[in-house]
Length: 219
Length: 128
Image 1 (cartoon, one colour):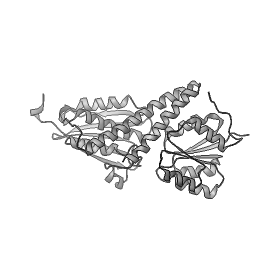
Image 2 (cartoon, one colour; image 1 turned 45 degrees about the vertical axis):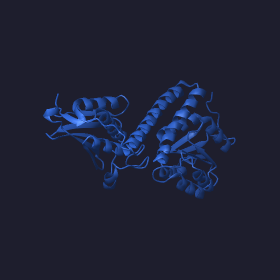
Image 3 (cartoon, rainbow over the protein chains, first blue to last red; image 1 turned 90 degrees about the vertical axis):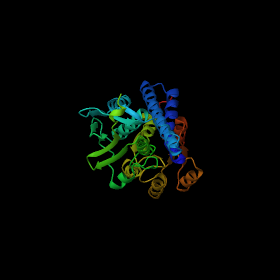
Image 4 (cartoon, rainbow over the protein chains, first blue to last red; image 1 turned 180 degrees about the vertical axis):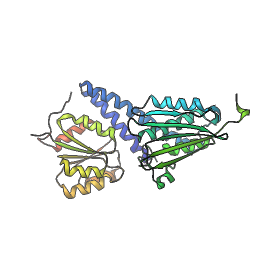
């Protein structure tokens, strides 16, 4: 794990170091603008890789604190879309709300983390200008959040293992290879489940289901 | 004299862009995001220098380098990689890499290596 992640950390670090040196040695305003933007992007990438690493270490040791309680699903979903939306470009989010937003059992911080990761993964594989759809439904016992977009397109074999711990830059997962493993573990700790479907040419859908909070928990 | 041509094969878009900006307009650049595309471009673009990542999905750097050496024995090759273990360096050298650079790296050091491998070919670049 460490060896695999070391590779995933060194490349964005190279981008930070390289552009910092270009900032120091080049006067061209266009180069300096590009450098500052790319340093920020690489720093965010490093931050995400570090988050994957720390959360997975904590999960594997049973040290991760999860505070499951009734929460407003509308607030959680809209917050995740807002957190993600400010950081991305070329990918718009279409939110399809349910007829009535339910309360669900979950941990606000970890649910946000999972939703933002899913949005990022789907957006990464969605053509620029296309929509990523977040559709929420509730059926009485569970609420479902579908995150759909242009990809990644996953084969049946990839679908079978996509929520496992994968090597960094695995074609099915990209990045650290830990994002979807982390998502599955975090959703399960909240009493929910996560699944994926994919059709060639039609993109993929990641679905999170969470138990709807009972009347006795409301308020 | 035409601008020296450099082919960059690396699966990381941000890294490719850094190298392109480092080399700037004084060089003619082509990019490939994996080894298979890199080998295709090798024949079409006919570079004077190859910059090759080591760990990539699909055909990895060692496999690409082995094939490059069978068809382009004299093409200067810089392996630029996040793999820091000595066995990777040894293998790259055995396969015929001219230079093995590890990430993170200094763009100035990278430019110095390029100029050393392209004596009399590297154009003035936009430095300080």
